[in-house]
Image 1 (cartoon, rainbow, N blue to C red):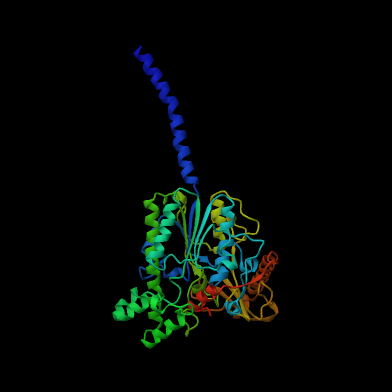
Image 2: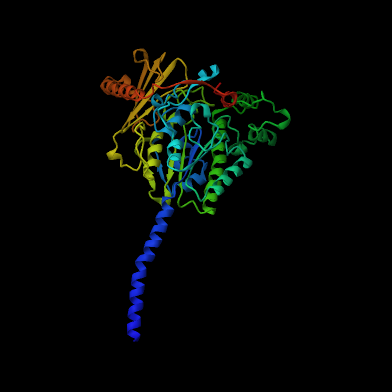
Length: 480
């Protein structure tokens, strides 16, 4: 009798185990499949000034810690060299010649600028259509299309101060049980470089430290609709106090990185506290870099948007996948237009046909497009296009560009070819060497075809009037 009972008990246990395992497995699958995505863009952050990318200062201890749980790319490039075209490429997976955000920033003076190509949806619109709640904390102009698809659309830089950051953390708390996409953009590394952390050793007095650290914050008693603090005013302060040097500007820039890194820590800690970190896809990237006299000796303050040297367009890209799906260093070239399809691919969402990037989940050997293209400089009567294939980078300059894709191949003024493997600092223009002329000719043919094909889908571009708040923001950042 006892043996019979034991046998029945054994059969019962054997029968329950698969059911229990199935329950646990399904529960785990449900957790893994929850779509919780945070995309953080740190404006003006060049990759080689992060400690995780080998920089001599420990500017980013929290980003360094994040890379241990992530895939991070040593050769990530922007598809534009200033904020508007580059961010639209990030959010749509398309080149500027396709999305239409190509005009120079001086065009903003006329208060008219192209808006996003009507045939293209940004990532928020695609995710929203897949029942994912979309949230934006970014001072990027809605009227250009940056606000499309966001259900909670806040024109706030959440890293501006602790008060705004607390709003962001509450947002995470309120949405911890939902599928969500949160896009965060901060200007706090961009000029004016308003943090003095690495200038303390320069023995600047407390009054100057306070001026620098609080420069972006206009005192209430002096606030008015016309009152703004600009990068030009900050540069005047640096000159007046004999601080306007390359090394000081770099120290100030690095201080901004260290400042932002503390907010990254806050987001990571909060996501762990509310138990979403393991399930979270967390992406950190930048829209362009910054130049500190590497190629233009007189330019070392707020200088970008004009060229495609590495310091202008090489940026960090860090992707923490849910449950550490993948991690480690990747050396092959990638670009911002690859972020959009990577997010969709991971969550098995169909990638729209207009997308020009490719999922980073795909092995590099199987990628269709093994080139990187950047375009849309910030100058009105001048344009540069760049293509990188393998270790070779080709840059062509032209004057009086026309059409929305900004081209004038009959008015090329300069051609440059660099071997990034043997000449990482881009000092030797190989175009001058006759044996490289054929390579340059081929690269230019490829680039012309890419831009022409890209622009075929941008015929619905319209220009709109910019809001006064957008004009003031760009003026404060030195664009106007």
